[in-house]
Amino acid sequence: MKSLFDETYSSNENQRTSRNIWYGDADLTVNSDYGKIMNLNEDFMVTMCEIIKNDLSKNAENKPTETNWYFYGSGVTQEDIGDNIRPTIMVRERSGEFITNFNISDHDFALNIDGILLFKADFEKRLAKV
Image (spheres, rainbow, N blue to C red):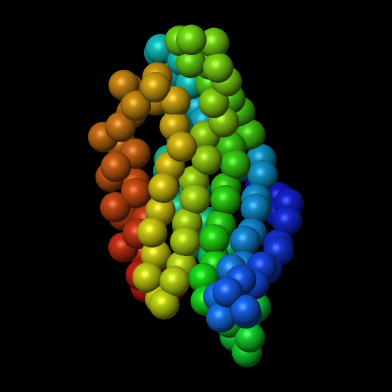
């Protein structure tokens, strides 16, 4: 996984500051019997938690009001209607609370939603301890 961008934006006359960090080439897919699905494993979760913890420590003195991370997968999955979907995991931290969101294909939803939801719940619990 490689760092792509790290940018901070201010709005509302500098009352809100949003730091946005993008990472690319995350190993988010694995082949299954029926095509590519999200590869959500323990090592990947630990890596993301370490990245987030490290990124948050860089702002200790001038902390933004929120920080957003975007982890883009290195592969794509084709939808039934022909669109290519790049799996993405997004994380927001605001006031010490974390929210995650996953962009997935309809194929991944049909084959892997239970695993994705379990990973998401565990990930958010771990982030709460960061």
